[in-house]
Each structure stands twice: as C-alpha cells, then as structure tokens.
Length: 278
Image (cartoon, rainbow, N blue to C red; front, side):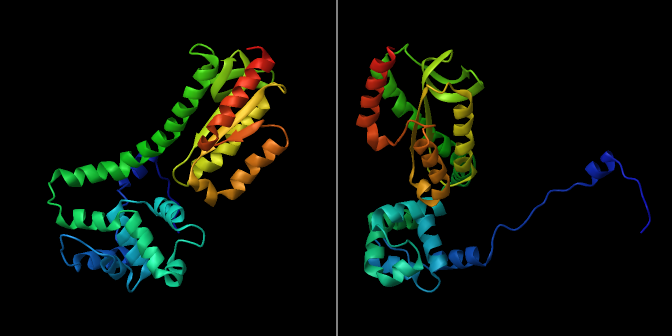
C-alpha cells in the first residue's frame, strides 16, 4: 500500500452523516400488527390477548407503544401490578388471565381506544420527537429533583429556612465535595444529605457510588452523612445498591432512607439537631 500523508482538513471535508435505518424486523412486525388491528370504539381483554398472539416480543412492544412506556418503565409497572414472578413471556404463559388483567389495570384498553380513534394533527409528529428526545431527559431530571424537593421540605421543617445549604460544595479536612444538603452550612458540614432518585436504569445509577465515595473521602469523620434514594430501577441494579449498603454497614453512611421513611428521617434529623446543638 502506498504511503500517503493526510491532513485534518482533508478528513473533515470527507466526513458525511452516519444515516441508518431505524426499523428492524421487530419494528416492521409491530407496525404490521398495529395496521391490521380492527378499529373499535371500545376494546376488550380479548383484543389485548390478540396483541400478544404470535410473537410475544412484538405484542408487548405494541402494548408499550399504546401505554407510552419505555422497556424499563414497562417492567417496573408490570412488576408493581403483577407482583413477584417475572414480567415476560414465561409469566404470561403461566398465568395469561392474570397478566391480561394486569395490562388492563395499567389502562391498556382505554389507551388502545384513544390511540386508534385519535385524529392526528401535523404538529403531533414534532411533539412526539420532542417527547422522545428532550422530554425523556427532562423526565429523568424531574424525578431526581422531585425527590430533592421532598427532602428539602423535611429539612426545612426541622432546621428552618436559613438553617441549611442546598446543592453546593462543602469543605472538609480532606477536600471539597458536592452534596444536595449540608447543615448548618457548607463551611460547617455537621450533617450532609445526598439525594439520589431514579426512574429508569442507566449509567447514572452506577455513578452514585462514585458520588458517595467523594463525599465520604472529603467529610470529617464525625460528620453525619445521610442518603435518601428511591426508584424501583434499583431492583435491577442490586450490585450497585449492595455497594452502598456496605458503606452504610461500615459506618461511612449513617443511614439510608427512601421516601416511605419520611417519619424516620424527620425523627433522626431532630435527634441529630439536639445532639449536635444546631
């Protein structure tokens, strides 16, 4: 092969978009199944069963499209509705009636009727692009922020409006770290609270261990470090959650709370307030 010398400009000028086809065989099959559906004013359980006939993967994809659920969200909702025992094809084979009743409880039949009988507008295409792109990111951010707001109400209840710092970096003897709440303030981190809320699995869930370790490394050894977290995706990320629990067991994190532990969190904050003389 002949030796040649290339330049940056040459490469830049030769670049082109990496366009690809978004449809695969499963998508084509789902489109065909939806196109073959009979238009009705009202749909029944038997219509939901028809969706799952043939390829279960294609059928459950159609179900997700009607409900507007991602794959992760679908698994979460089915797990909450059906209980233990799985959420996929084997669960459906074992108990088709219970599975279909679960889909009905999620509102599938109503969503089928609304979708099939909806008269679209041109702007719907752009709205859907917005929802699946920027909207997906916003939804993830809001889930985390909603949990932070929930915790702030409780912190304010105990320490008052000016008794804490929010979403800042605190100074410790071994460095500086970011946290969601620090009491009484970033220059005197007697109590540190980190909040991690999740609605879908992803890389951000694994980042939490590193975020916690950064706080543990920077804080005073006698600073009380509390973690508030929530979100059913932790069920699928048990290895990460196990690492967090180990840190709590080792004394690096004083206690881990979820939103259902509101009373415990408030009680512990009041106890710490008295013990530390804040």
